[in-house]
Amino acid sequence: MAIVRMALRILLSLPLAAFFAFVGWMKASAPVETLAQHGAWTVRIPEPLGRAVGVSEIVCALLLLGGLLPGRARVGAASAMILIVNQMIAAAVHASAGEGHALPQNAVLIAALALVAWLSRRYFSVR
Image 1 (spheres, rainbow, N blue to C red):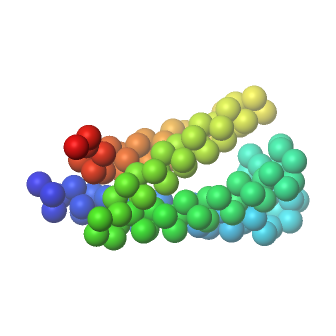
Image 2 (cartoon, one colour):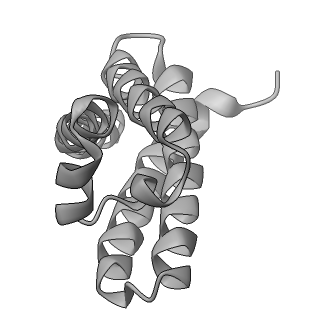
Image 3 (cartoon, rainbow, N blue to C red):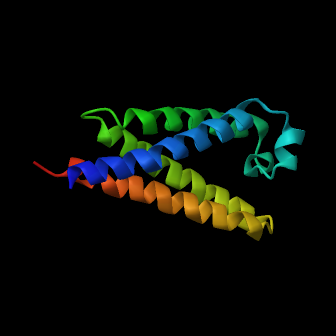
């Protein structure tokens, strides 16, 4: 069963890390006009904060990958939980801006990230 759990963590963590590394890079480095064209929620917050969100997404993407290393599942699960909060805020910003079309993407990302954290649950046992 541990092999199945690890395989699922890998299958979820790799594309999630790639996604958040890409969107994080865009938020951290792309001109605000380009972000607005692509519907980035960070254009509705102060630019330095939006850039910091992008950097945090890159860091969390790397930590998702780090969570796949032996003995580091807590790192990946913590990163997934941070990204869930990120996506909940993104969903709230999209909803308040009347961008309901973006909400399904947020929901799918939240579900996938929650599954990564849940698959790592055995590493959070109290001893």
